[in-house]
Image (tube, rainbow, N blue to C red; front, side, top):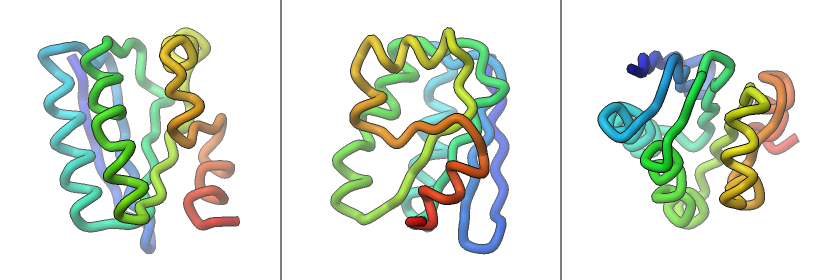
Length: 113
């Protein structure tokens, strides 16, 4: 089961992904990213408490790659555990998405610094 929380700090919208994203719960991640991308240009995805992500969850991120570029949205994922990061790397998503270690690095990237 996944829990999604959101916050807005100045002009940066942060999505907190907590728990496990699988086929049945990936819809919650999709809804949150969809809502965020319809309103904000600076989005961070906090995955510090993400324990597991299935191919369906990865597919959610993949489905937004073109939209992010076309809309000029700066989305940065951060805080992946080694296990979860490895899954992103296997599929090459670490080359297609902005992924960083820390919140501070993510803020720098999302702000274009």
